[in-house]
Image: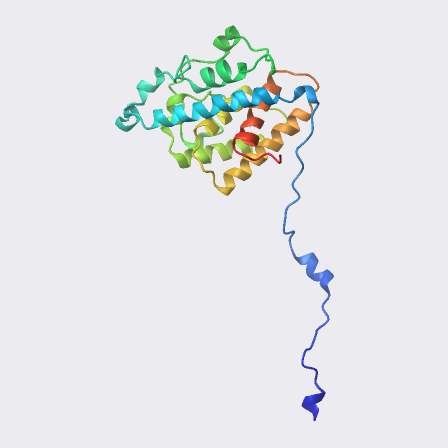
Length: 240
């Protein structure tokens, strides 16, 4: 008789407020992509042309990586090698400054001139260290084609993630840092893993945040638009 008086289901009363305090949030609070004045945003036509050139650059780098020069270990020959459609074998000069920063310049103007590029960007840097442990020491050193191709795929991803993390606390982006990010994005293998995708989303938000504080178009805005277009549209991390 006593057994029949006991309910089949017993519900205990829990203090759920205490449990909620002990649990960490399931999803972090991720800031939205900052808005900026319309006149600082790149035009759709400029983005399309730039992405076409960037895709061709990645294909060219892939071909160079599989060339006989790389298999034989003769990296010195890459200092004088030419990418199809470019003038020099240095990633930071012929790709970032000479070609991509001038793509669609009527739509995305830049104050850089060929004379300025030649006078500010070194052509050779034999002392460059390619180890990912030298990220901070190479902050003032432009990326060389031989150095980028000399890295394995793991080192490129590691270097890219480190440089994105170094940029996160900053309020500006330097020309050299933009060159490194561009060169590493051009050489990183696809498809990307989850950590790399998250880092590129962080790069997109950071570029948008810095750009939102700008009022006039300048060289830094051009660099930010380039990196935002790569991370947002090429690697598919944009919210749109």
